[in-house]
Length: 116
Length: 110
Image (tube, rainbow over all chains, first blue to last red; front, side, top):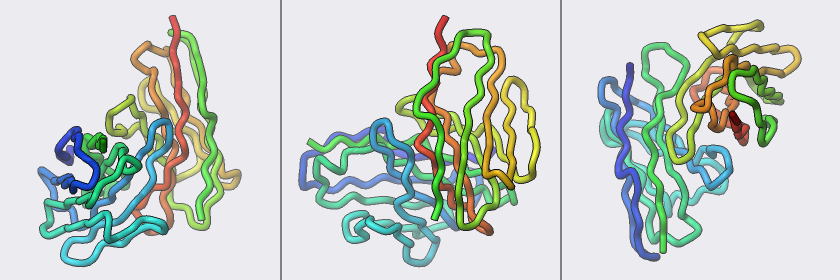
């Protein structure tokens, strides 16, 4: 089945630094990828929709200048958390539809970000 | 907008049957998903319902009533490894975007 590879799995960084998270579709082309954030004991909240070759669409309340999304190819989308702060510590996860007409999404393995 | 409700926590005994309910109010509806998520891991797909009725897949079954805005996930012959969060999610018409409920944390006890 379709596989979405996400890395790093976890990252610890100092406050004020930037962190890049990559999400790759391994055996299919993903024109669209979704980026979610999940705080402890909370559900997944959609942050933005990444579209290949065009600007991402951000959900209300998500700062586009802080969470930079790039979807430069049909197999790669990146999320960069700029000037990270402790409140950005969360589980970030990407997902993509397989493009085969299947309705379900395939998820990356997630990235646990801890900002000190 | 979308509003999805499911119980926060449930406990059940190994070998038993448990039903996790989900109700939703949405401005547009295409289908309803159930995902399983272990702590610190990505969600894994369990089921997808578009039409009313029961879909059975091994030990897991999912039911949907579109008119009532209601779904449930039924887990039979519970195993310890079924301890996880179960997420109900809906998609809007013509969209792959999923809106998740807050999840139900299921604890299976011996």
